[in-house]
Amino acid sequence: MTRRTNAIAAIVAEVSIYEKIHSIIVNNKVMKYEELLQSINTILQAHSLSCSHLALTAIKTILTLECEILVQLTEAHIEIQYWRFLPTLMALFGAQTRMSAWERTLQSKENSNFHCKHNAVTVLIIFDSRGMKDSEPD
Image: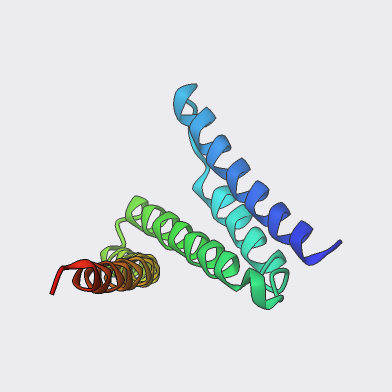
């Protein structure tokens, strides 16, 4: 398999997890969180090296963070079922930390896009104002 195919397979596997969760919830079935955790860990381990190309780094980062967040939330749910509060709190803290990291990566991309667009608009305004000064009568 090529690197792109591995990345796509990882995304498809993650989407299938979401579809499985959705179908269980819609059909009012009992969710087996241990099996869910095992399948998420399988995806995480199987595709941790799949996106090794430099162009796929962003996809690998997002996929890894998303899987780690799902693992932490699932572990928190399993722990709270057994009334283990400290491990639950630690898993929730881990999920929140990874969500913050994910948010920072998204914000940095948005800020860089904003700055690029802002710089382009500034250059256009400067050229436009210079052109207007040149066209003014002396």
